[in-house]
Length: 396
Ligand code: AMP
Ligand code: MG
Image (cartoon, protein in one colour):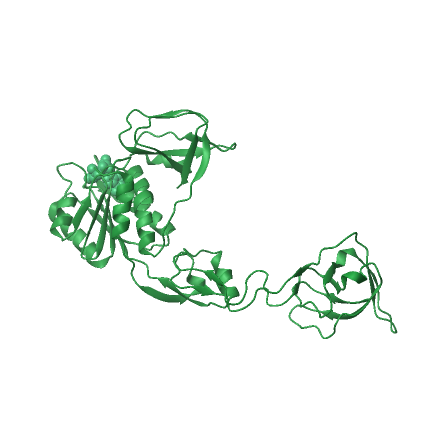
């Protein structure tokens, strides 16, 4: 049996990418960038007013100043600012020649213009910042702003828009098929008969993949019959780069999956991993296809997808995914009996930022995930987490 770290490394080393395509930047969240993005201009592109107010010379602040024009956003100024003059200016407008400060409209005394006289303004505040966003202070023209391998999200969309990058090169998505095994399974819309249960794994897998932006294809339930299992796996394999199976890989008499995969040209790299839950976990490759077999028990299946398959799929999408962790203290002592596997425990976080285990009866207890916000690792050899000890919560 290999360790979790070995399983992750072994599978990641086998991963491949599936080419590059160009898409509209609005469609880019969830995709991985495959090109350098360079700014085509300074940002801001000109010295810009950060306030609605009056643009003037700092040395004139305190004196009455004549208002020589009104500068709107989107319309360049016509006049320069000279001694004891100013221009009324709107947020986002160009700072006129000669001005080095914008005084806020809220801090000004204004004498209205009359027929013969221009309006006069006097600063009535105590002191003022320049209130100017300077040309190029955010980004310079030609600067590298995004690199290949970034998993794009909604934060990157306005950045791409700012530099006019409306078509972007991203890595192609792998196609993913999902297949459940087990004669005892019925679909969730049905009422299980005696000795049957509802197929939850396929739908949690599809939902977990959906969260990663993967639109998977579902192939249904293969009953525990070798021929049926072979036909259904064969179909799904022919149509997808990655196949995710649930169940049928442990030590039972009717766990046909490893043998079937072998007969279909898939070499099984491992079918047991030293994690708890999730020991019966399979990974195989062949014919440029990748197969993961998840444990039948739903909590195991949920965790293993997150722990092993998620980094693999992201790698196939061109992204090196590092799971975020939140380091917090345990709110109470947590213990386990055996320590020969890396264990992952579902936990919640209370209002004080302390970590507690959720009620968890074992790997079939899918309801335990209702209250869990994440999982924490308990390494091989460790049986006790003391109250107050730091734990690394990996959000689910
Ligand atoms: P297996 O890995 O096929 O031996 O299944 C282990 C346990 O998980 C058994 O109790 C199965 O009934 C259950 N199980 C298998 N597949 C599913 C599924 N798709 N949804 C819910 N439970 C499942
Ligand atoms: Mg089974």
